[in-house]
Image (tube, rainbow, N blue to C red; front, side, top):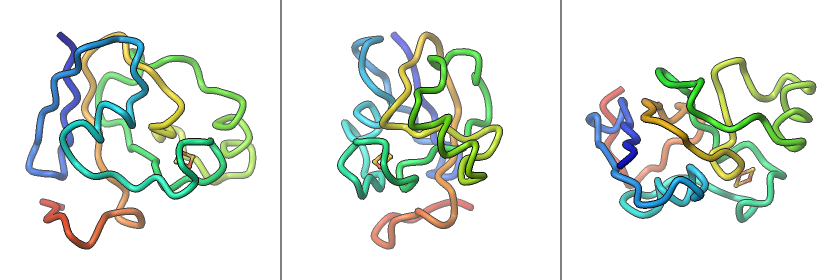
Length: 106
Ligand code: FES
């Protein structure tokens, strides 16, 4: 079973049932995560900073490549609504998109 650990949400670990789920769907199964455009790859509010396990994520989609080109998605950042997992990862929620009703640890 694959695991996603959210380092700045008190290292909350979510176990995912299927490899074919998008990262955002895994996150939303046990916590809240911003996704303003409704998972369409048109905003960057679902961004996850990848701390560990970057190699366990699917190749960047066209939407992600577009944001990388525009300088709106950093080297260790992925749109969680676009990528799938093949191994365990550790991520952080960017400060800019942290939700006011959740208590982050950094
Ligand atoms: S929810 Fe908008 S790009 Fe992922």
